[in-house]
Image (cartoon, rainbow, N blue to C red; front, side, top):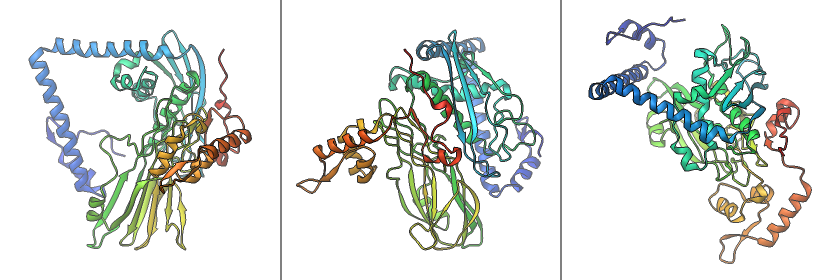
Length: 472
């Protein structure tokens, strides 16, 4: 364990500390480059602030800062919190594995109480801390970071998507929320020696839990679920005898919304896209044989979930595959009758004699030269009844390869046939009959659809907290 220590002191680098860090990295040159970039960015920010203070004076600049925060507080209170009916609402969602114990439900629960123009968010009922590194110390700094992390979800309550995009999130949201944490020893209040390296699993899931509990409070005025970050890659020794590590952050489809489909292959990490094919093939002993949208990965709905990636790699030399991903068993949930999206999948030698599926958490998985590895990322959940989707939109999705003809028929009840000109068209009469038959044989649509993976881990289709009571 390295205690807190300055990398720079009085503007000068502490070369001994930097050397120790670099020696403990598999890619020391990249680490040094990252540190140099971060320090340069901090210096530039400090210089720009100094220019502002010099031009306008400290008192004026600080007054502007306070005005910006106050405006955010008032805007969120007036435009967003006012849309949440007073009352108490409960929901939970799960990380599925911690890399140590067998896959199981690691619950994060929120009890949301809206009263007096403020939100009380209580995390009681969250699972005990995990043996693996998915724990997150959410209670540090009195949860201020967590408040600002969760606040963007509230923007979905804005009048229009355009207004939502205009709303800033800053420390002005802090007075509007009170967080209550469970006693020490949970996923959000871990105690030493609980590991935290993969805390992203829990942090991202909390966004979905807040969206879910707000969906219960507002009759679905939230997007369906999404999981838009995971790490995959390869490592080994290249043909020059040098160690290499290829790692990329692959996004996934976002959830359908009450006014629009989800977006395809969204990346939540700024400036972190899939690595370009040319860069990958030039720098690493890999061929990218296919990069596409994963057909049928978006959850079916009146508003379809966004699609995830399908990316295929051919190993040019012996190496190893790694993956740090959640939602490989559980799916991104659908909302208000929408269906869950497809989970994360990795297939080695797809369609070949040695085909096998890999779990979401894997390291040092041997990949012999010539082997094909297919990575499919999560699709977003669907929003609303799929049988209410406009047939023309389903046809468009089929033509664009986003939805297969089979899924169009079975999930959306839309029958696509060749037209007289050979182009696909909707068979209107067959579609009406298909939709009528599907409606007659299905049961009530769930408010939340967690997908088949939930039954695998929980032994049932729905959690107790999924039930939504109708308000008068």
